[in-house]
Length: 92
Image (cartoon, rainbow, N blue to C red; front, side, top):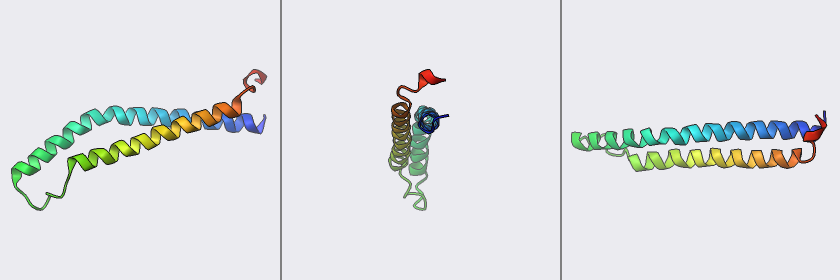
């Protein structure tokens, strides 16, 4: 097996897995945003100063940034693998 073809397959597989993981994580963000906003309202209604440093918007932004990095890594790995596999699929 050609080295470029094997690394291309590995890169494509890792890219697809990363895309799937990022997609599922972003899909879960819909429910997570609701939980964060409900928790923020609950903490504000409780009047506790101990947990007042919790920011739902900050937590949501961190999670979205992480998921965007995962998806962009998946796209880059998939493209890199496809470039390495160009013209080598017919030799299976």
